[in-house]
Length: 138
Image 1 (cartoon, helix red, strand yellow):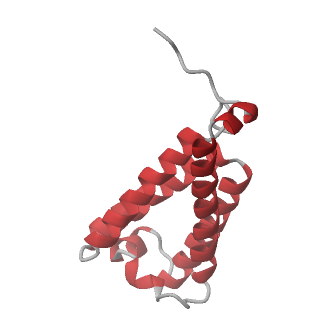
Image 2 (image 1 turned 60 degrees about the vertical axis):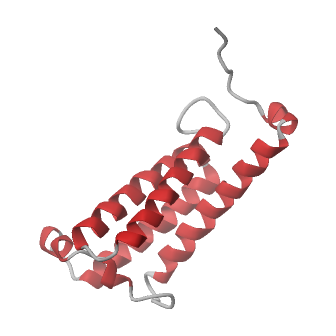
Image 3 (image 1 turned 180 degrees about the horizontal axis):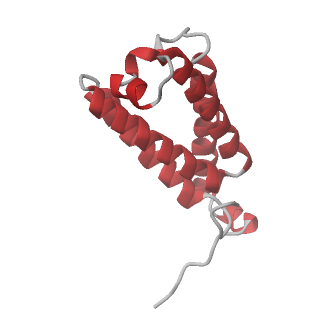
C-alpha cells in the first residue's frame, strides 16, 4: 500500500498538466467572485436581487439591496482568499456556492443556475485538492 505525499513546488514542475489545471482553476475562482462581487454594487450584468429568495429578507431584516451589498463584499473577500491562500479560499468558495445553491432551490425557478453552481462547487473542491500544502490554510 502506497500513500501519496503532498506535492512540493518542485514536484509540480514534473507534472505540468496538474500545475496548469491548478493555475486555471485558481485564476477563475479568483477573478469570477471578485467580478461578480463588485457587480453587486453596480448591477451591470444583472439585477442580482432577483436571485434572492424572499425568505432571506424575512430572516435577515435588511432590504434585498443591502443583503446583496454584503454578498458582494463576501464574494470579493472569497476571490482574494483564493488568490492568497487557494487551499483555504477554495473551501470558502465551495461553502459559499452551497449557500447560493440552497437559496436558488428555495427560490425556485432557477434550477439551471443551481445546477451550474453545483458544477462550480465541484470545481472549487478540485482546486482545493490541487492546491499545494498540507493544511487547509496554505
